[in-house]
Each structure stands twice: as structure tokens, then as C-alpha cells.
Image 1 (cartoon, rainbow, N blue to C red):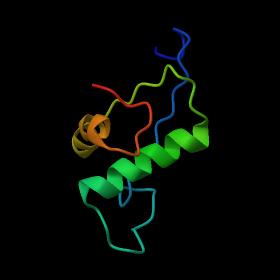
Image 2: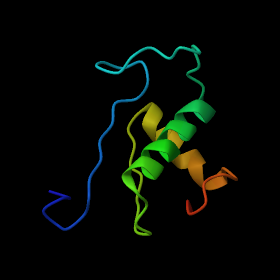
Image 3: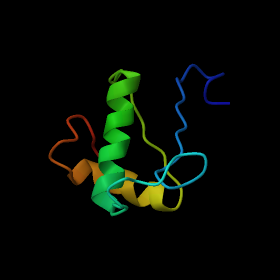
Image 4: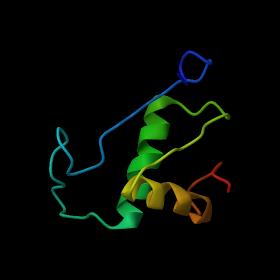
Length: 76
């Protein structure tokens, strides 16, 4: 539905959830999840129209991104 409306959609699995692997550092805190989201964005290539949507822990990480100093373009 979003892609049909012209949005590019990327839907990764969060660390530790199948089929992703368990973190080698054993780190699952919100800051690590925020960093993962920013790395996915960097890998996908930011467009300037980027929107992060999360569910459950993804929502917590996504809501915290605007307060993250390394999130260059994140805003509430």
C-alpha cells in the first residue's frame, strides 16, 4: 500500500528476531536499536522524505530517534 503510493519501503527484522541473528555483543537496549535503524537508513540511502514506523520495541526506538544527536534528520 505504501509502495503503491510512491513511498520506498524497507522492513528489516530487529536484532534477535528471526531470521536475524543474535547480537554478538548481546546488546538489545533501545540505543542499540536506534543505531540499527540509523544504519538501515544509511544503507538504504536517505531521501530527505524518510519516515520511520515501528511496532512494539521498534516504536520505542523510532520515537526516541528525534532525541538522538546522531540522527541528523530525525524530528518528532
